Amino acid sequence: MLPLLYRDDHLVAIHKPAGLLVHRSELDRHETRFAVQMLRDQLGCHVHPLHRLDRGTSGVLLFALDRDTARLGSALFEHQAVDKTYLAVVRGHPPQSGRIDHPLSRRRDEAEWRGDASSDTAQPAVTDFVRLATCELPFAVDRYPSSRYALLEVRPLTGRRHQIRRHLKHIAHPLIGDATFGKGRHNRFFADHFGCARMLLACTRLRLIHPRSGAPLDLVAPPEGDFLRLLDSLGWRPALPAILRTPPAA
Image 1 (spheres, helix red, strand yellow):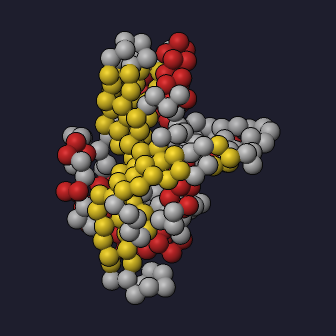
Image 2 (image 1 turned 60 degrees about the horizontal axis):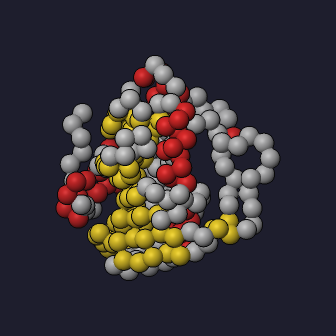
Image 3 (image 1 turned 90 degrees about the vertical axis):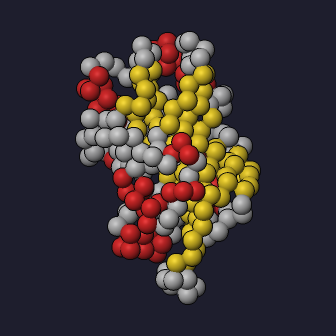
């Protein structure tokens, strides 16, 4: 059963676990579990994802329960009218806060089965971040005698594919657990030392105007499971915003 964060007559939000695809992907043709199918079976009705999370990313995933709401809700995401907040664990110590304003070329959409959807034309992409906590561990993971890591609160202001992951790589603070844009040595260190092999990126909050009622909607998914255990191992839970410090009751 997928954990429900919110449901009304038009929308439903779940806390997507890391490792679960949102929908069928050309890159994972043999996968048999998808959030769309699981939620449809769980609720007994069709569902329409309004946005996407990468397979390795956990957190708030919002669906519409009818086509009209899907059209209206998708437009909110397309026009950057949704405030999205993520937690990310990265290599190194970035500045206390910053804005990454770096255009990104379009990447092929995993849901597309035919044709080449990639493009060399760069599109505007902006990501804000705030550093919440840091640590320095006495392990020579790379070429230094110790290794530094940080916990970031990240807000993408545009919606390019893999934007957060690509922007963090661009500023030389790649995401831990990211097999595509990260660093294998650090990924393996977290898997071996902390027992945490997942990508350490989670969508913890979505704020938007309800596309049908016009009421403000605030959807929150505190970190849990491997992500929360990792934060506790590093002593970082107190650095979280108060609304994220306590996972929901099982």
